[in-house]
Amino acid sequence: MRSLKIQTALTFFVLLIVGMLLVELVAMQLWRRDALRGDREQAELLLDAMSAGVFSGAEKGGGGVGLELPASDGAALCLGTLDAEGRVVVSPQCGFAQPLEEGLRLAAASGESYRRLVSSKDREQPGGIMLMVRPIKAKTDAETSSGAVGMIRSMAPIEARLRDGGITILGYVLVNGVLLAALGLFRIIKLVVRPLENLAEQADLYSAQHEFLPSSGRRRNEFGRLESSLHRMVAKLEQDREDLRTTVHSLEQANTQLEKTRQEMVRAEKQASTGRLAAGLAHEIGNPLGVMQGYLELLRQETLDPGERKDFLDRTEQELGRVNRLIRQLLDFARPTPGNRVPVYGQQLVQQTVEMFRERGKGGIIYNATLAAEQDLVEVDPDGLRQVLVNCLLNAEDALLAGPDAENSGRIEVFCENRLAKNGTSVLRVTVRDNGAGIESEHLAEVFEPFFTTKEVGKGTGLGLSVSAGIIAGFGGEMGVVSQPGQGTEIWFSLPLSAQAPVGNENCVQQ
Image 1 (tube, rainbow, N blue to C red):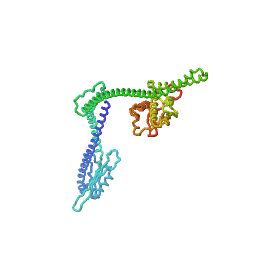
Image 2 (cartoon, rainbow, N blue to C red; image 1 turned 180 degrees about the vertical axis):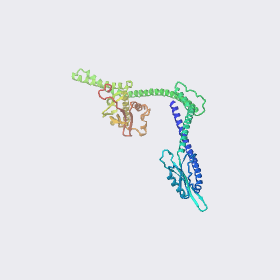
Image 3 (spheres, one colour; image 1 turned 135 degrees about the vertical axis):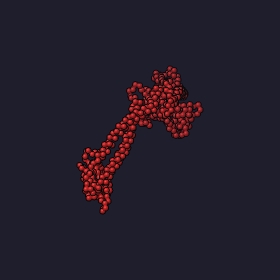
Image 4 (cartoon, rainbow, N blue to C red; image 1 turned 30 degrees about the vertical axis):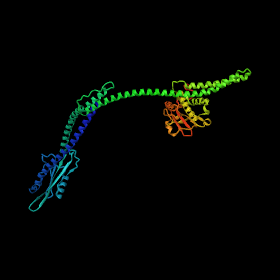
């Protein structure tokens, strides 16, 4: 606030000085005009006196010899007359005889009075000199005679008086400016600066733990209303802060509950997918078990030679390995995981998931995986990514098995490739395509909605694609669908590539 006081004082002082200087300028101009008018009137009186004695002096034979500078008029430098006979008489020691004589003759010839400034290089006459002439006429018994009177006047006395007066006025202006500035500053500090200091002090003392200082209630001007408005604003801010705190707490609870519900949905959908896989694997496991049982019956025969016995044992071991591999893949998919995101080679995980479905061999469907991505290292939860692939493949199976000719032409293709995202970065894009009946255009916008399904009652939860879209979004990717009735369906998702080195990184998870 100290700088504000100084700036206010300087501004007020400068404005006062400028205003008073303008007033002084106007006063000096008026004073100058009045001084010039008084000087001209005094000169006119002197010219009147000279006019009265021109012809009387000539008649007496004096010829204007009595032209002497009056002691009462210090501005008159030179006097001169022109009589009827054309004789010019000037006062003694006149240094401006030539311009005075020219002026007298010009006035006598033209019959008009005039005055003009005569340039002077004399340093003793800083204000210049003034030439004043007047024609005169006198009637005698025989004729009318013409003459003229004039004088040279110095402007230095007037300029000196004006200069002295200007210095005096300037002194008064400075003194009055200082006094008025001090008085005005005192009033401004009392009316403006101190109320602002009080408001600033209250604002500095305010905190979230303390109430705003109470209003004094003694000012009924704009600052009093401003103070009251600040109190109301602070009270409103406190109320809004409390409301915001309550809202944030409610949102935190809602977010916690939403995350819990989402995790429950993911687990429910995973359990449903696991059940469907288990049902399919139970049928597929029966075939190798029957083959192993047949080989065991053959091994009981005593007539087998060692070569045949070894061959039957090898085949039995292969079928047993197939059963073990199917069960292990199902257990890997069904086991709970912490959900940590780690670097994963996406194409390997895709290949293993497709291989699991291929070994199931459900409904004669042909599975094919095309791995064309040059970079496939992504940071994801492996179990979550596997669940997304399983949901997409199960939906594709359901679409093919629901068709009339699925037994002969069912085909599911999975493509992995690198593409550019909308922001220009490279991503890993995985596409699951089937040659089923497709999806009606009016249903495409609802594919990722929770509990939406086109399957029969009891054959789908309607959560598979919705949960999958949420998982992919959590990985920072995107998911979409492209379909036309009668031409199959494509479910695709893209994942941002990992910034870690794709080769020789011990943290990478190779599925």
